[in-house]
Amino acid sequence: MVIVIGPQDPGSSAQGNDAVWRAVTVENGVAGSTRSFAQNQLSDFVSAVHRTSHHPDRIRWVWSSTNAVYPSLLRAGVSVSRCWDLALNQTILRNAATLPSNQVQYSPAVDLRTSEPAPAGHIPPRHDPQQVSLFDAPTRPGSRAEPGIDQLVEEFAAQKGAVDDSPGRQRLTLLLAAESQGALIAAEMYHEGLPWNADIHQRILHELLGPRPDEGERPALMQELAEEIGRTLGTSRLNPDSPQDLLRALHSAGIEVSSTRKWDLMAWADRGGSSSDQRRAMIGPVLRYKQLYRLWTANGWHWLDEWVRDGRFHAAYVVGGVVTGRWAAHGGGAMQIPQTVRDAVRADPGNVLTVADASQVEPRILAAMSSDRALAVAGQGKDLYVGIAEIGQRTGSALKDRPAAKVALLGAMYGATSGEAGSLAPHLKRLFPEAIGVVENAADRGERGGQVTTWLGRTSPPPDQRWFDTVKDVSTASAEARSNTMARSQGRFTRNFVVQGTAAEWALCWMGEIRRRLRSGGENGGPMSTSLVFFVHDEVVLHGPESEAQVVADIVRESAASAGRLLFGDSPVDFPLTVETVDSYAEAK
Image (cartoon, one colour):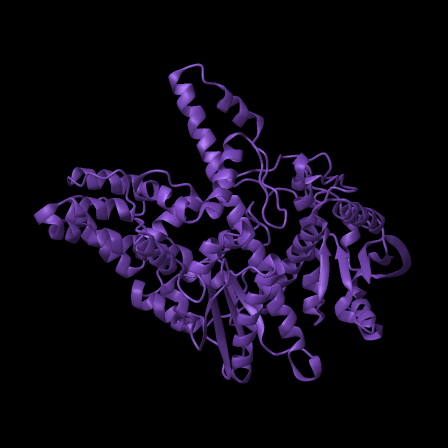
């Protein structure tokens, strides 16, 4: 059963609690019965539908945006099994329709693209003609009115029609379902939150930075380091927070580096020959200061005040926030929790964290999507790079050890054409021609301004006209060099798009299967107490009772294998995981 829900009338004012909403059932593409209710009764309506349905888990709820609708349901204690996120799916279909070979005929019934946020430092006009009274909220240029239910029903029909009439119907349907499932998971993880012990975090900050400073001042231990750096570099007015000031001071002290980045400083020290140790001692305080500065600014006291409440870090994910389909985040550093503060991530008493990290996902994805059996077999039951090295040793290839195998394969996926990766590329291609052919074909298409697709059909955006104009211009030597640079850059993008995007699809299917099993793995087919609470690229974190830990670990492993079968059928590629049950996130390797 499909149920479309939304405001009865279009317009931004339709979002008030007393606004009338309507639900429309859709059977075989035809709108059927309707039901009206106040928006503040949405959770009651959904609960009633679930109670009276023989199979509530089979209902697919269709709405304009999961972010706009689902959080209020979760706050009311109501969750759904399936949804169709019209806004997210519209983005996928818009891009798919730009590539003729996809044969996706799609014309949106209503524009569901969200407005871009105003750029930093943007000041609204002194007078907005649409602001008729002092306390009216100013309308940002480009903001759209909330669509009404009739428009949403039409948009759902347009999306379903586009998918059903396309040659890649099965894969595209799976992609849209997985993207929508991801939106549910992201909202639930934000609602649930990652357990975070603020006292432990405060202790870490105190040990590494000193007491919390007054506003506008450095922490005490950082100030001591800043003064030490100034003495070492021979300047008393150094501001090490400023890369420009620091670089000038380094140059004045005879440290010739092009930037203040760690690898540039370490490379300078390594070039010192017999003086390398002395050089490392000179830059040691600088590197330490930069490390503490990152902690202070990214996960310091202000971060703790803003992002952790009631013992939880609520990561605000942006599903499909990266063009390849990977997730992004609305601030808070949700896509990376530094090792320094991971000990603050602690399970509640009687509970544990299950941390699962998928190993070498992108290379394994490449093996599966290319049907390169040799590469697939290389990773069966073992480290993939070790498997490649073993093949290299047997065949007399230069890929005879793990480091060389890793450099070569990552270079092939990311477009490294020089250095060690470039020299090893021919050896890799001889061993795994099908896999390397996939990324090379994608790169070639990108260099010519073409588009590529992931396994399920997410389509890369086309270059803009300025790109074509620049690449076409070879009138001078500098223009030709610029043309080649632009073409190669686009080729690297499309080369990686097909692999990274398909890996993102696998991750969505993996999490979706974990969620499905958690929702039905409890007593009498009910939900378990364990829930997904964090996700970053190829790693998930779950939180729940210790008594469920072993079952949860099995679910996570089985779901990874299930996601592989869902995407690639009986492909010999496996997706091994490192699964650990811990009390502290810092204990997970």
